[in-house]
Amino acid sequence: MILYFWEMNFTTKVPIAKSNNPIGYESMILSMGSCFAENMGEKFRQFKFQDVVNPFGIIFNPVSIEKLVSRIVNQQKFTEQDLFLHNDLWHSFEIHSKFSTPNKEGQLEILNEILDLTYEVITGVTHIIITYGTSWVYRDKSSAAIVANCHKVPQSQFDKEILSVETIEKSIQNTIDLIRKVNPDCTFIFTVSPVRHIKDGFVENQRSKAHLITAIHNLQLPYFPSYEIMMDELRDYRFYADDFLHPSPFAIDYIWKRFSENYISEASFETMVEVNSIQKGLSHTPFNPDSENHQKFLNALDQKIAKLQEQFPHFRF
Image 1 (cartoon, rainbow, N blue to C red):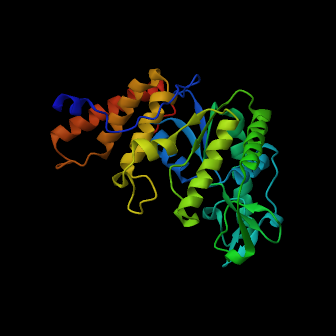
Image 2 (cartoon, rainbow, N blue to C red):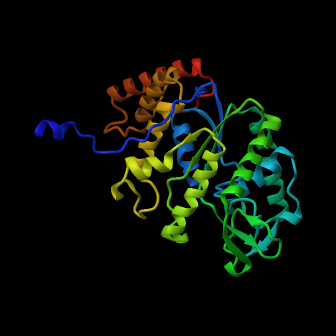
Image 3 (tube, rainbow, N blue to C red):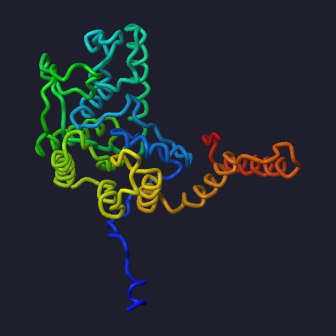
């Protein structure tokens, strides 16, 4: 009986199919979507992969991502008509509020510069990872357009609705088709954020995630089950941050591990170990920075960095 107890598994392992086009250090990656895309982007940067994350900031819903991709692919510049003034800042309903500024002309210049750079990125990437956060959207009453960010405009200006599975399917397919026009060979990876949007309501959050997952699976797209890993493999509040809504650092590390096992090439694993060792060395705080031992340690670290940079010139530590 005791032997049987120790042979038991204490978690439900989510099955994940290995990618036929795994990510390597030669790959160029574009990640778009929710705040979880930012979490994964930090991991790519930590291990020195070539990754661009959310060039226009965090965006949660499929329709807003599609709209932004359309603007990028069709090189449709931002104009004054795309901006509005609220609380002394100029905003766009299409992008994150981190780009809001008090200077309209300056903001247009920045947004269009990012637009040009993102067009170059999207035409040259090998992998595009899209992380959807929610099916709930806000529709501006004056324009009837779905917004990516409300920018703290009074809620009375918007109607809240949930996107149907059919609408999401169409939006995702449009996004793929747009990108395929300028980059026919890139590999797509879709996922649904494990962050729970409880402000929408407990049942409403589950409906929202279900619509996203159903649409992705109806289209038979490559899917990494980050939401399912959080819900089943990490079914415990100790794996959440203090708000009990976002994954904890441990959970993010664990989901990254599951991702890397299946979506990163095995040929990259040895380099990842080396990079991780260097990163730990760089973050080390010595008791005596001037000691001979620490100077030897720094010299050895410099040699490791130089050796890796010979093989991968884009590495920056």
